View 1 (cartoon, rainbow, N blue to C red):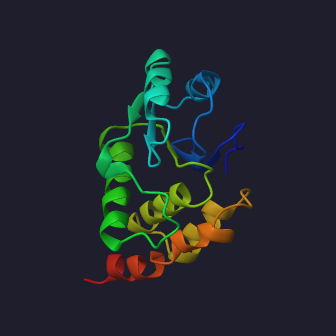
View 2: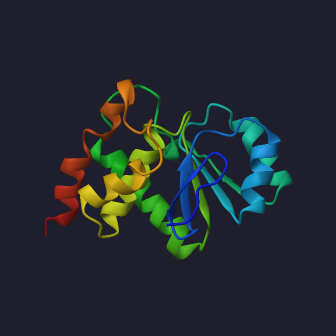
View 3: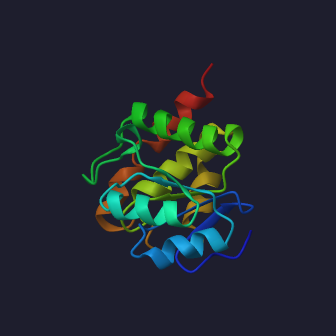
Length: 161
């Protein structure tokens, strides 16, 4: 496993990472310096600033409405898990991006999105959960725990013929 960055956690050999939203232009510069090419914003709370910072540092900012997972502390629907897992897969495999996925704090929605991608790409749910929880103690703690509740059902639907 790669070393984690100043505020993110690597998931796949310097191809995919997740964490909190960007707080400043310096965060965008740090992502670029570490080889990222795109930001998938599932929060969209700071969309205008983040898209401007990303552009200045030659990062693709991806934050469309259908990418958004609202901060509701509610279970994420199976449809949304499939949509976001497919989106991550497309960005990694088709577009060839080095991708940073983020929500607000990097503890609920973004690790759930990344775990859904890992399951969709063939990992077991247990393995996916271990990967996103490694080195990031806040994942699915407190009110964020509800975001992961549909992952087990999602994993079963992905595995069924």
